Length: 146
Image 1: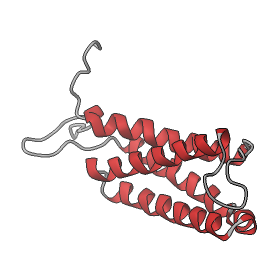
Image 2: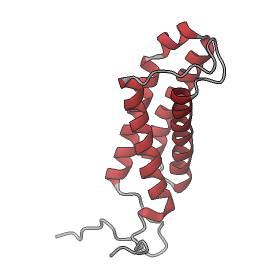
Image 3: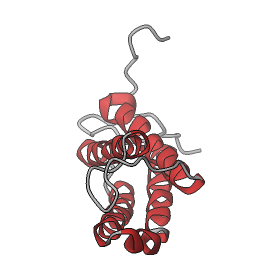
Image 4: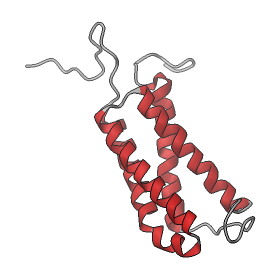
């Protein structure tokens, strides 16, 4: 019977990210991307730059989903953490003080189901990715934990 290699790191090899974590990150990113692409038409109607932002965001999240599956390095994961955390912060700002540019600056947006779901996906990426990027997958014990 072959030896099970989950969690085992061979000498000189870099630790690998657990496959369920990679699948979760990629799925969350693809989900957020799908939502952003789906709402492009309504945002273009509001202002062309909003539509362009949602297009760029959706494409970036989809590309990152592929990148993290193909090469789940600390660098790639960190890119996803930073990008999605920035989107979450922007979402919070637009729901509390409003957009800083556009046809109705400083008018807070309402929280909708689709944007809340997209933000939840982005939070999954930011939190899980930050944990992984901070050596969460190396098997080292975290201080204070057994």
